[in-house]
Image (cartoon, rainbow, N blue to C red; front, side, top):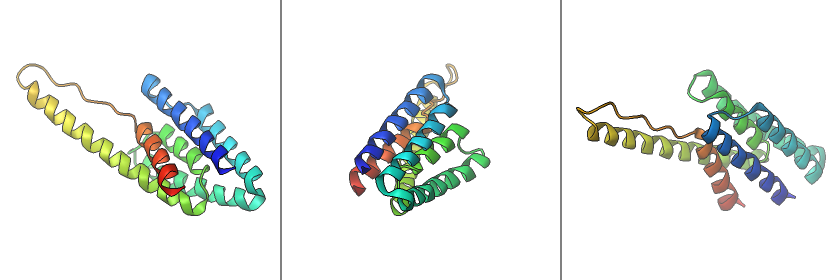
Length: 152
């Protein structure tokens, strides 16, 4: 049954990346639907105990990104997507998911800084260089895939 939850998580995260790149928003219906679907699948996978374990994953991932959202570091859509995907992992494995997302986010941010500096130097004296925009949902998706491949 874990495989079904992982497929669900990949579908939700992939849709989140699509919407975030195309419209620069992660819809509430996607995050809420992903969250409800993950908890239903967790319940059918192992009953109330499994549901409680996945609810702990939801609380940890959602809570960590809630702090980032309140500090205006992340957008609300990223926080809701992390909550929904956190519900796809049980208590111990959600920690690795959060770690992998943070690592991919750091790598993504580092690449954006390097690219922006390079573009600024290249266009000195001509016109201001456009800033690069990479949605954080990409880091969330890559962290999800990394967690599934390395942990399971």
